[in-house]
Amino acid sequence: MSEKKTILTGIRPTGNLHLGHLFGAVENWIKLQEEYTTYIEIADVQALTDNFNNPDKVRKNVRELTLDLLACGIDENKATIFIQSMVPEIAELTIYYSNLVTISRLQRNPTIKTEIAQKKELFGNDGESVTYGFLGYPVSQAADITALSGALVPVGEDQLPLIEQTHEIVRKFNTIYGETLVEPKALLSEIKRLKGLDGNEKMGKSLGNAIFLVDDEETVRKKVMGAITDKNKIRKDDPADPEVCMVYYYHKLVSKDSLETICEECKKGKRGCIDCKKELAKNMNIFLGKIQERRRYYEERPEKIDEILKQGTVQARLKAKETMKNVRKAMKIDYFD
Image: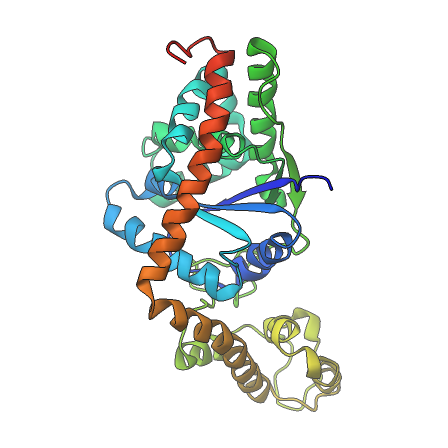
C-alpha cells in the first residue's frame, strides 16, 4: 500500500471565517483530509506582518480560527492543525531561503504587487508602509510548505504566483546543495472565490459584504435584506433575472432543495425580492446553525482546543525537524550531528 501524499495548507488568524472561506477553501480541505496526510497551519507569524502592533488580536484569533475550522468539519483525528510560530524550524528555513531570492523578484510577484498596491491605496503613500516581513511573505510560505514536505498545496488561482515562487526556491536550493527538498504541486480548488452580498467579486470583512460563520440570526437577516438584486426589477410582480441577483446566488449554496422553484418564480415575476430574501435568511440561519452548534461543543471544552493545537504542533515540529536535519547536512552546517 503506497504512502499517502502530504498536503500543507495555511490560513492567517486575522478574524473569523466567512462563507467565502468555507466554500472557497475549507470545504475542499474537509474532502482532502480523507485522502491525504493533511497539515493545516495557523499562520500567526504571517498574520503579524499586518498586525505586528496588535499581538493580542492575533493570539485571540488563533483560537477563534481553530474553533471555526473544527466547527466546519475539520477532523482533529484526520488533519493536523498546528501553530506556525511554535515550529521554529520554519523560521530557520525562511532565513536560509532569503539568500536564494532577490528583492526585485519578490517585488515582481503578482500577488505581492497586488497587495502592495492595496496598501498604497489604503495608506495613501508610496509604499513606505510595506515591511521587510511583508515583502518576504512568499519566502516564508515556501518554508511552510517545504518544512513539512508538502507535496500538494490547495490554493486558489490568485495564489499560484506564490507556489511558483516556492518552485523557484526549491529548484535553486536543490541545484546548489543537491536534491534535498520536495517540489510541491498546486492543487487548485474546485470552487472559485465567493462573491460578496454587494456583488463584489471578493467577499471580505473590510468590504462589509460578508456573512461570517459566527453571525447570529438577526445579523444574518439584516445582511441578507441588504443584498443586491436585479436592478431592473422595480415592482414585486416584475419578472427578473436570477443570474444577476446575489440573493439567488446565495440560494444556490443553502437552498438547493427549492432552487428550481425559486428560479422559475423569479423569472415569471411570481416572487418578490423581500420574500425571497426572507427565505434566504431562514435557510442561511439553518445552515449556519449546524456549524454553530458544533462550535459551541468546542467552546465549552477549551482544554480540548489546547490539546488539539499542542499535539498538532508537536507532530508538525517532528516532521520539520526531519527536514531541517537534511537541509543542514546538505548546506554543510550540521557541525555537531
